[in-house]
Length: 114
Image 1 (cartoon, rainbow, N blue to C red):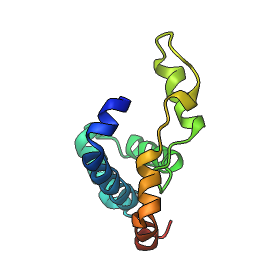
Image 2: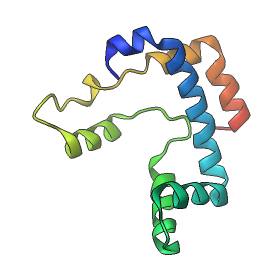
Image 3: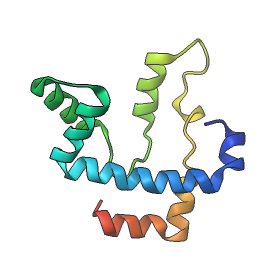
Image 4: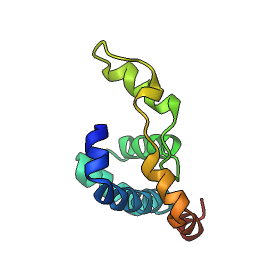
């Protein structure tokens, strides 16, 4: 998101991140359900490809959804159009920081044990 959008839609983004944390936890802890969603949404018919896809997701998805410099660098390497390649230029954790400050992150961590 652009910085202007983060500022203008902070409440919406906060609710989205809370829901993303909860959805991510379900996907990481309920393999059967996650695979059903992946198969349906990505139209995966092969059990082998579904296993590979889910295992890849599990390996690359942090429980807290905290973005990492390595993940940003990987994305930039895949989609860079000649702009900045500094991951720090693309990571804004201010909404997650606000969740921590308000205690909401701690509540989610207790609820989902990450």
